[in-house]
Image (cartoon, rainbow, N blue to C red; front, side):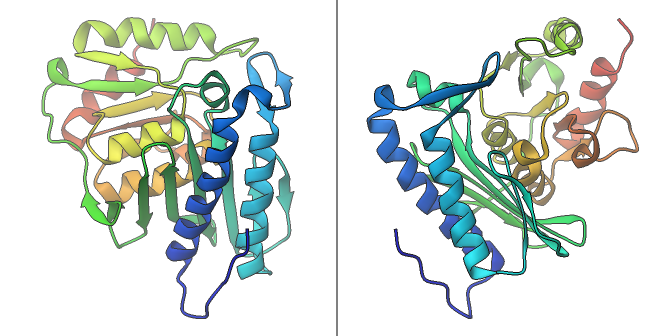
Length: 266
């Protein structure tokens, strides 16, 4: 797929264009997913030629536009040294993708001088593009979005991720759910953390938490959350999620209740 970069294209516009074009590539693989070559990185963690093709395309497009930029991709790793770093998950929700479950996304973020400034999460299946830039708010397909106005835990719907395989925090995750479930309207485990965070930013979920995610899982979503008015922290009160990989986020009115339950002793 040929790409063109103009001198007037902003970082956000470039990220949106890149995510959408990667989504188009993935949709072609989606239509023939039963024929994909798949390998295991570890138990329950898959990579396919769809992931690899999407990431190579994103890398070529983003670094082609900004050759001096640094790169961090889930499949191709880190490259370069710069104050600007693209952080990319080319297919967040690979297991869903391979199983024909229509909940997966492309996640593209830009970090400048150590601060996340641009975030785009693209849901190609539903033609939804969540986008945000520091100081400019968050949008869904160009229209402004913000977190929900849910005020009480009994009405709140939360998202989370569930660890698998030999992950060390399986017991912690189970304890989190056990503490939270009696107090809320429900918990969803949908299989794409990037898209889960976008759903919180757009008010579809009232909050989300998950332990020990990778930076490419959450970077774009964190920009969306901050620009949409969510409150968020890492594992500890003073910690940013991008530091630990643990995300706790909710609407401002629900955040204290959520975190007090999650941080309670067993």
